[in-house]
Amino acid sequence: MQRPEAWPRPHPGEGAAAAGIGAPAPPARAGEPAEPRLQEPSLYTVKAVFILDNDGHRLLAKYYDDTFPSMKEQMAFEKNVFNKTNRTDSEIAFFGGMTIVYKSSIDLFLYVVGSSQENELMLMSVLTCLYESLNHVLRKNMEKRWLLENMDGAFLVLDEIVDGGVILESDPQQVIQKVNFRVLQSAKEQIKWSLLK
Image 1: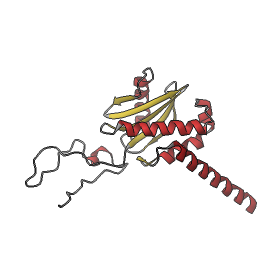
Image 2 (image 1 turned 135 degrees about the vertical axis):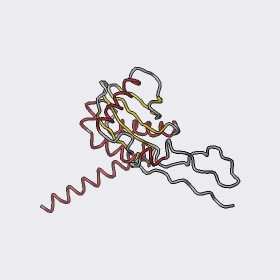
Image 3 (image 1 turned 120 degrees about the vertical axis):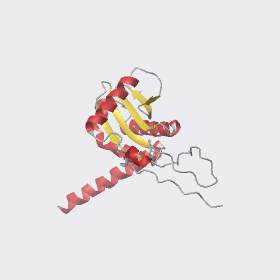
Image 4 (image 1 turned 90 degrees about the vertical axis):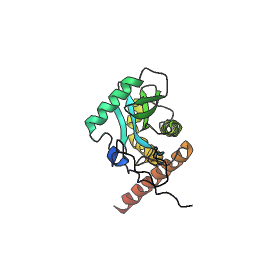
């Protein structure tokens, strides 16, 4: 049996136009019904991850595609998401054609954003991993002050979980081990360079 050709998947940064959103469906092959096809699965699961304070101001953010290409558009999106979610007890929201999972802790709001077709459980696994890994890095002080003092560690954690929109890891223990290894390697490099001076 011959495998049908896969439609090209957009790479982060190519946006909705490359994904064929709003474009006509490809023509059906001879002998195939002319009904909509299922969307090809993609590794690019996460559109954005951001952390806001309890006033809705950005503390940390990474966007993995060009849905919101400018800082102004990103900030407006974050403000709208915060206004919709900061007073609710649920953990999931659908906003602007996107699926958003979120969690709050004292004065922090953590958000993971995916497309409207994305599996909420996958996004939730990223959010849980981010929360638990940060909780470890911040020594169980999930507060704005401690996050700001440990921003390098927070970005290391995020980079170990998601790279370019692709989920790399969802086990907090693995993330913590990798972050500790990178910190140790960096410390060794600094010692080496200081000895060479």
